[in-house]
Image (cartoon, rainbow, N blue to C red; front, top):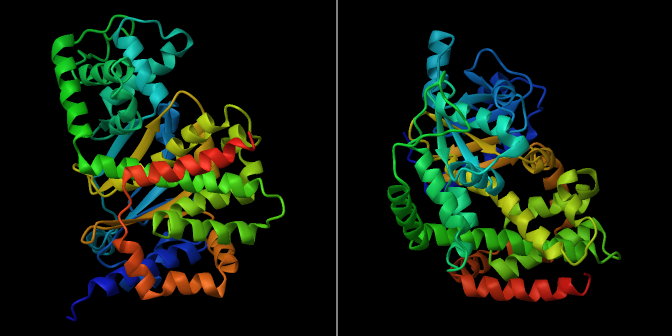
Length: 419
């Protein structure tokens, strides 16, 4: 057997991604795999669809959302189909198999802070019933259970948690830690009178340890830098939108140039988010908060960047399942912005390369995006993208958090003129 070089493997992953992009969503998953078996070999694929194919192991997203309406799905369709080389061979041999799945639940800030209010004895008011449904769903689980992950909340609030006068992030993390020790019996549980087997002091100590671990982690600092990169692209897109003399092609060309110059990389997913805003922003409620610029726009743009980064963060987690063969992420939220986000940026599939630790997210309208992107790239810009010497230069430039902050300051200053 001929050994595959890392470069060949990267190219095969790209070809596998293209195969999904070009596959008609109404066509069967079986045809996608069987027509491209050599491309997908050694990769794992999670494929979202409204047409479940009974020949492959699948999971109903609709069923989970109906059971707990507070949960917002990560994928666009009503169900999921799964592929790996071993599972494919087992399916052909046995006809039908069961695949262990790792369901994981992340919290947005408003959901996380309801745990703080509740654990502290405060009133949940009109949200009490929905919160109880969420607690029961977490504790009773789906199949082998739901992991309960609040690392995204910690990352989103990491900078605020460094401010001595701001106790909210710490108190929220302490409440989430204490929730691990909720005394829960299905029939006798009273949402208004929770009992915990861990003291406030012990939970507080664990919260301090968690914050210290996140503050001192280079990986977490990398997440913050990636979120800042997304924020820069979003800011740049909004500034380009305000230049009414620019058509979409020119906006996209300038955006790609900015990505290369400011980030030293072609930030494809971030540019996809910007494209969706520039081309289709008026059609999706997710973008309503920044449809017109005003005094509060900067605050709203920062919040939107965090919402979009939630997708990137789930993408990272997708390759880290500890329990099942596949990771199925959900978000818990008490407002509809994550519902609106999945409508605006519908995720069709995720391809995972466990050997090279790469994850490719494919959006439902990826083909339209790629056509627009290719039409916008001039020969000169394409040369910059493809030139190996340029690529090496870009890869050698390591931007610091301070560099990214300076670039953000420049764009925020430019935005202030429109606000």
